[in-house]
Image (cartoon, rainbow, N blue to C red; front, side, top):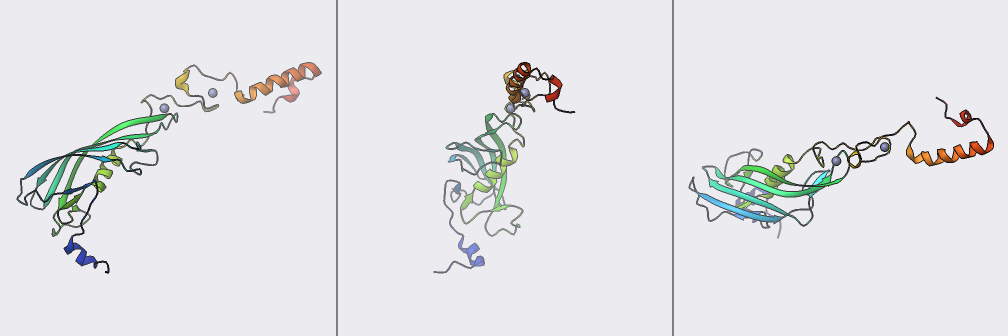
Length: 202
Ligand SMILES: [Zn+2]
Ligand SMILES: [Zn+2]
C-alpha cells in the first residue's frame, strides 16, 4: 500500500489519535453549539524553552470551551502546566506554574482558510497540541528569576548574595588565592625578604 497522495490525504482526513486529540463529532456543525472540555495530558519532555521545561511526569491541564462558528470550531479557555528551570541570575533551581489564555479557531477540513491563518480539523479530529504548546511557551518568562529581586552571584567568587547580603571582598584578591597568600606571607617572614618583591606589578 502506498501512502495516499497529498491531495487525497485531505479528502481521506487522516485519523488522528493521542491524548491531545479531541473527537468533535458530537458537536453539531450548526453555529452556536457549545461544549466544555476539561483535559489532563502528560506533559511532553520537550515542552518549554532552552532555559525552562515542563516538569518531568507533570500534567498539562486544559480547561476549554468549544463553540461552533460558521467556519469551524473556536476553542477558548486556559491551559496550565508546571515548569522547572534555573534562575538566570543565581542559577538556583526554580519551579513555576504557568497558566496561559488560549483561543484558537479550528476550521472545518473543507474551509477555504489558508493554513497559516488557522488550524484545520482533520475529519472530526481536533489536535490541540501545537496551539497549546505555543500558548504555554510564549507565556513563559524569557529570563526566569527565583524571585523578582534576586541579587545574583558575586562576580569575583560566585557566592550567592541571597545567603549573605553583606558578602564582599576587602581587596581585589580572589579568596581562592587568599590561603596561598597567607602561606607566602609566612614564607617571607621566615626568609626576611622584602614584602614588595612578591607583589604583582600594576
Ligand atoms: Zn536567583
Ligand atoms: Zn565574592
